[in-house]
Image 1 (cartoon, rainbow, N blue to C red):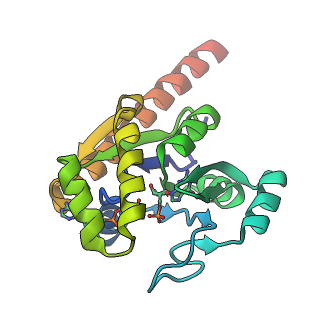
Image 2 (tube, rainbow, N blue to C red):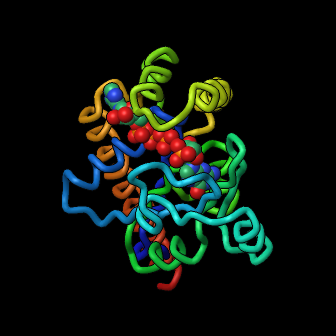
Length: 207
Ligand SMILES: Nc1ncnc2c1ncn2[C@@H]1O[C@H](COP(=O)(O)OP(=O)(O)OP(=O)(O)O)[C@@H](O)[C@H]1O
Ligand SMILES: Nc1nc2c(ncn2[C@@H]2O[C@H](COP(=O)(O)O)[C@@H](O)[C@H]2O)c(=O)[nH]1
C-alpha cells in the first residue's frame, strides 16, 4: 500500500514554454501539499537567480562526482550543461506524504519513468513554435545563439510529447494552471480508488 506516500509529478516541455510560470501559479493558487524539487545544474547563474532557490549551482567536477555517487534520480546534458534531480530530497519528501513537482526536460523524464512508473507525467506544450521563440526572446535571459539551440531541442522534445500521460497547451497561464490542478486531483482519486479495491481484495483473501 502506498496511500500515505505523495505523488511524483513530472512537468516537462521545451525551454521557455512556461513550466516555471505555471508551476508558480499552481503553488500560489491553493494551499497545496506540493513541494518543488530544486535541481542541480552546471549552468551559469542568471541575473536574479539564487543558489538553493532556483537551482543548486555546481561546477562540472562537482556534478560529475555527484553522478559517481549516485546522487541523482535522473540527470541529462542539455545545451552544454548538466541538469539533475537530487535523489534524497525526492525520496524523503514523497515518503513524508508530500506531492513532489519536477520540472525537467524529456531525457530526464524518460529516466524517471523507468524508476518511478507510478509517477504522473505532464507535458506542457506551446501554442506554436513561433510563440515559444517569442517567449524565450521576451524572457531576456539567453543569447540568440542559445535560443536557437533551445528551439532546435524544442522540435525534438515536441516530437516526444506522446510519451506523456497528459499534454497541456500553455496558451493562457491560468487555464494551464487549472488543467494541471485537475489532472493531479484526478490522479489522486484514481490512486485511492485502486488502493481501496486492493485493500478490499486483500481483506476478502484473508477471511
Ligand atoms: N501562457 C503564457 N503566455 C505568454 N507568455 C508566457 C506564458 N507562460 C509563460 N510565459 C512567459 O514565457 C517566458 C518563459 O517562461 P518560463 O521561464 O516559465 O519557461 P520555462 O518553461 O520554465 O523555461 P525553462 O525550461 O527554460 O526554465 C517567461 O517570460 C514567461 O513570463
Ligand atoms: N533533466 C533535467 N532537466 C532539467 C532539470 N532542471 C531543469 N531542467 C530543464 O533544463 C532546461 C533548461 O533549463 P534553464 O533553467 O537553463 O532554462 C529546461 O527544460 C528545464 O526544465 C533537471 O533536474 N533535470
